[in-house]
Length: 276
Image: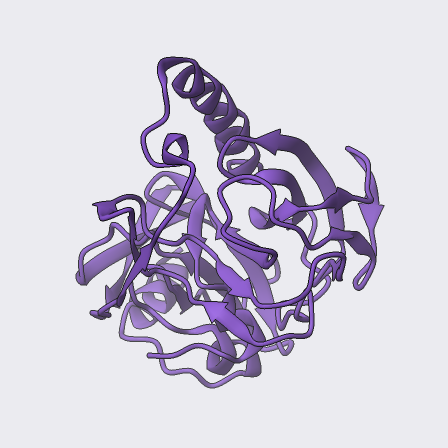
């Protein structure tokens, strides 16, 4: 037990990205990802952040690592990961760096999509509960791949984390990554997974959630067509649906969210397109 505690305390120092996954994913900023080494024991440690289980995988047969989603609301500075031990829990500290996100101003003709009426608000509240429940899913499987494929081939049109102003009024930051592609373009699953939620929502339009394993979840929205069913198992590259402009959208595009431990994080990290 003392040896295990010593190992964990050793790893409490700032992360030195050595393995391939760490080099790719370790972007510890608000809305980013922290990769934290957990030792090389025979079994994967159970880890949590802000009370939520996090993804744990073995990196290149060397050591276990926690891949932690950091919410946009987290302030830069010291944070801690909780590791479950037979004797209790052990805190492993890590640091979150600062990142400045730009502003985006959007004009919408449909003013209800800026200031919904009372009936809209009831619908939005119900839909938010469904989506929150899906984001909080945690299945036992290990993701098929962590370096993800792009769901569509096209230029990025709106990056993650933008402070968004609709008709001059500030709303929630952009929680995903947008690709500028034509309506009807097939959207492919960036990794294997299971369809855990399908819906047509006030803001998101036609939407699909895919669980890749251990709280690692993709969400696709504004789709013109959904080509999968609830509970369907998908392989890497399988078509989820077609690009559209349903919900709150000014035109056809592909919007993709990535969630880790119920934190929306920058999908650009997983396709090698992150901008510090």
